[in-house]
Image 1 (cartoon, rainbow, N blue to C red):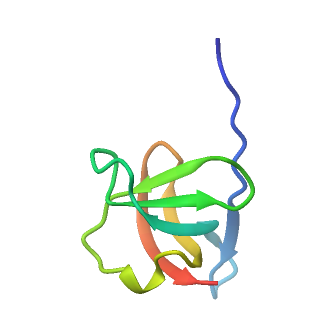
Image 2: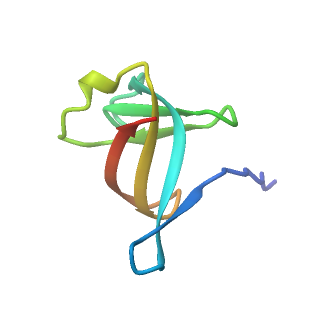
Length: 85
């Protein structure tokens, strides 16, 4: 059985007009499963959780609405930045 999960990702436009990054919107929290990542993003438009593993310090954003900029896909992505909305 296959399950289709729809995630709303927004594309951002660079200064030269190319669309080159994706953004997830949601609430940033400390992970409840350290084997999957040290942070988790509760997406604002679904029940989906995105686990993020990073050594960067985002403690000031915990519990806040954030925009997570990334490159890649849901299964394999590279974190670019996390900023408060």
